[in-house]
Image (cartoon, rainbow, N blue to C red; front, side):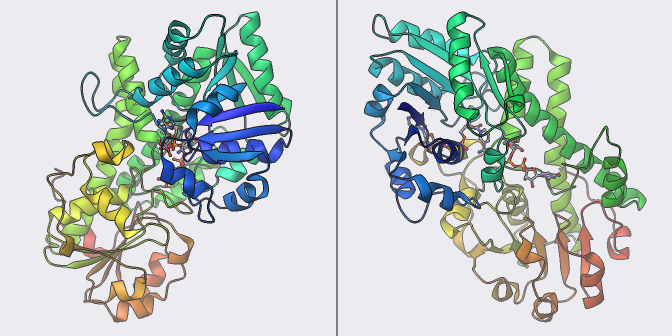
Length: 485
Ligand code: NAD
Ligand code: UDX
């Protein structure tokens, strides 16, 4: 039986390995992690991440050919193929801070593999890493291993999106495998290809050299995020001119060369990947002396920041230029629907912006806990993807009375002056907005950061509505634009 071990039981390692085990009953898969609570959760009835369809897949093969363990060393030693799916956050200190990828967790995983391996291993980069990382990993492995033990490094980046991870894994657009162009390298590529070929059609398994595979992942995320920043930039122009961004996106997306996906204007993209990977790309370009290329990609992140700031400004300027002491209901905190993940969610920046103007926030999200929300609102930028004990609390930590977290949108709306929709959860579309309106202070505002609700219906109830990139209410049209700071 082929044995696979995956280091890192997170959003990628857990679902990806569960799918391999599910599709390949003849392979034994063990997912290991240094976080004991995370492993315990994977072995419990309440998995550590919320992902539609994940429970069924995990429960159908857990303890048959899928195992979760905190005994990292022994499972590494036992395996033929080792996936490394640890976090690769943005560096917070030192050289490249705020841009470069922090490979501390990757390096420590590689050193552990070198320490404990007694037989040849295929080591697979599943984490998103800077191009050329495989070269550094090879050096760590080869300089620290026992005599006679050989390693082949493969790059096999993951393209799943949260909220649709199980469908993405079961039916991927493509699987990408990069390896050394040597006979041993190509043998390793073939071995990994054989695993995926159990359920993925061969013409969707792309093989390349190592550097193309590593760079393709950064390129894919940069280009996806660029589309969002492009439509978000258009949304600002739509508001200024009376065009409707949904109509523009539809018309543009009908061009088969462009296509309709990833053209939904929003308050900004979030998630653990886009910003981190673009900043990493910017840093790599700078290190290669490509200043113009670096500046080009940096602009994608800058437009994203601009979009969040623009949203906060719109809220404050609409509400008589102050939200001080006013209650605002924040609907949704996750970075997109169908996930409880809040990493880099635009809701954080929007909430901090409103708190900066002394608003009182009442936050409701169907999947995010109060602890998580409070942690997110007090953690310094870029620290969120590092272990909790290393993360200092931000000096701008907000006092408890400014933020309430609630499990009932109707209760939370009582006495509110405005509502900010931050996540496009389906349930927000079917709330009884008349009931909500009746309990609110007047004038009552809705600021829809996701174009999740029908503005005309809300206007009929009496709300003053702002929807990203849509023609403005007369109320907002006449307001002087506040400077963006
Ligand atoms: P995550 O933080 O959810 O999981 C990483 C896990 O690795 C953590 O549980 C951590 O405890 C563990 N870990 C760290 N160092 C370890 C070590 N030395 N030994 C054992 N365990 C260790 O991260 P994630 O979202 O799963 O992302 C992992 C990688 O995949 C990142 O590089 C990310 O950029 C990439 N990626 C993420 C997504 C996504 O949607 N989240 C999609 C594609 C690629
Ligand atoms: C992304 C990539 O899609 C995935 O391929 C990669 O492996 C990891 O990063 P993820 O971050 O999980 O996946 O979700 P995604 O669906 O890409 O959404 C990212 C952010 O962009 C979310 O905040 C989402 O709301 C936003 N978004 C997406 C828009 O604002 N408009 C869109 O049209 C699409």
